[in-house]
Image 1 (cartoon, rainbow, N blue to C red):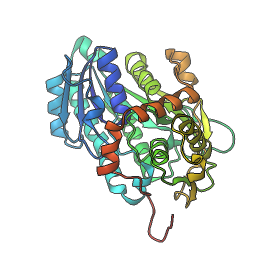
Image 2 (cartoon, helix red, strand yellow; image 1 turned 90 degrees about the horizontal axis):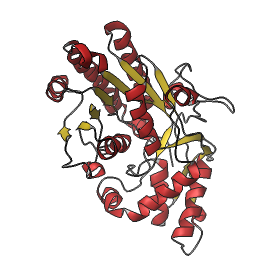
Image 3 (cartoon, rainbow, N blue to C red; image 1 turned 30 degrees about the horizontal axis):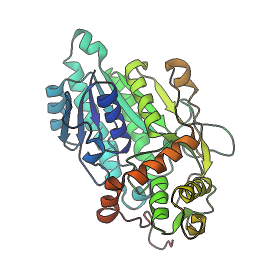
Length: 353
């Protein structure tokens, strides 16, 4: 297959790119603006491979996206490019509106024009796969799980922008007949994760003996999905998913945030013993505004219909992730030194952390 991957130098996008190029032998064009969270080093093993191309470009540039599609002639577009950090959306919502909503509109229009010009088998084969988040569904109580039929109830600028993009994708299918697929995933973790998110932040702070910030009382629950399991699910959907359908992808691994932090502390203590247990570095800080209490995903549909299964449990996945960070400071150390050193993000005026 020939696949155009937007955001292919980002966290999830790079996992998809590596899977497609290194394991599946696909012909891939990565389109990435290389913002702070995009890093070509994450796909360095793909560079120079036959069939791999890279285009540094902004997805909001519709004319350039049209040109890229016409030149590359993809069988599918996997649209992962997005601003993704809730904390950053609280104090900088404009970037999320521009990239996640206007950028998706731009990609849809470019894809619509490209698809209209296809004929025969090429037209029948084409897919536009939009990758989204479970955060569009809002917050769960103590029981239940999100599914493909859950009503939307976004609570942050980030989740609202992703909800809007989901609606645009479905509207382009219904109105223009664009053959789309939508996936909504739970929280990802794994290698090449920019260190602003919980798991890499805690790993790196703990290694450096810095405070480990836990929002509120640490009781918020997330369902954790290893990024390589997610990448396999996404490729399964683009290859075998039914046009117009949505698939929820989860890790069946609900954990309280405090549990996650404590697990990381204990595993690092085993691997790199320090003068004191790393749990002593935990600091409870002012909660995130509008912090959703619980997420959980019912991924039964993708399991039943497409045969996808996750390979990593949370226990195996978090251990492998820690080992990766211990072995790959060439990747994360420059980011900590030059882009993001671990400071608190997302605090509004008048809030304290």
